[in-house]
Image 1 (cartoon, rainbow, N blue to C red):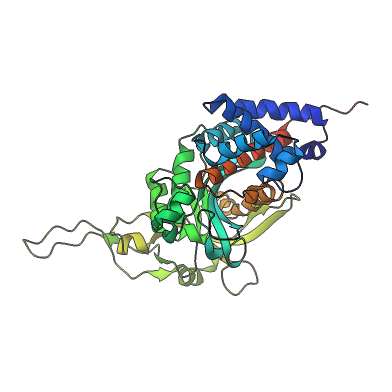
Image 2 (image 1 turned 135 degrees about the horizontal axis):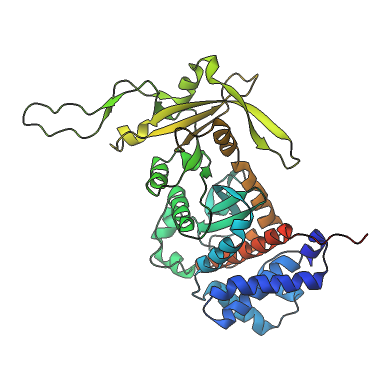
Length: 409
């Protein structure tokens, strides 16, 4: 068993704990056969090396053709909700890792052909280029002692949603329509916020942070966030005053939306006009080798332009966090956050730089647990697979947190 080598315990003992873990979290699945298949699949993900697709995994586990048919049906067609399994894992392991943030991200899964749900030639940050792939949006809890996936949503491009024959072949439910990646991320955040899990600020890159609808939805859900934005993002600076204009004449409609007393500016322009006293050198990240990293930050209260000017919403103040590394000609990064006005600067800086840890999740989920090895062409099967990979990941996280018995003298 791979995990046995990693944690230095006997394989039989570890397998017994794996069985107990999966039986515990899979107890929410309604049918006994579903629970048995869940255990077998997670065993294959954790115990066996090599490719984690169904056929080679069952061959290594020495299972019969009948077992293969049962597991294939369990993955591709069985109607069990994958959220049940993920929620059970999250509520068991989440409180153990000392959650400090939730990270939104997406990853590309390379695919051949055109029949896997959502596949097309599209840009993937994982690939760093346009390639034939699926994109899945994910949410992860990041803690002091580990990380944990909180959910997955496969992104379906618009042409997929409009192609009925293709949808039927991929078994995409009729209720699933086109959702942008920020909308899918918002769905995952809202779902996880309803579970028994410590809620934490949501962290995301520019692809999500630039979306005013995503930020507004999190604010409506009373969820905190620290999300990256581009240098060109437009804001009203801290000197701006907002007031509701008088109506036009005695019979005009009363105005309801506050208007600014000056024009907006880019966050880059605002950063460059800040005085030197606005910049603070703060610790912002600890590497895996426990080396503290510092950088220069400024923190300014601003109002984002898009919701006010384009969506006609009331102005809402946010933190603009700016990082300008010493010796660089221009600032390197910008974030918007709805954390409270009296939030300590050091916490804002650390949260802004925390998102990188999700790469550790993806490395294990793909490299060790076969996240990108699912070869089926079923929409439901893809989400079942990600739920079972989450279960395997949660078990290994719990194993790493187990206290070890002292060695004999």
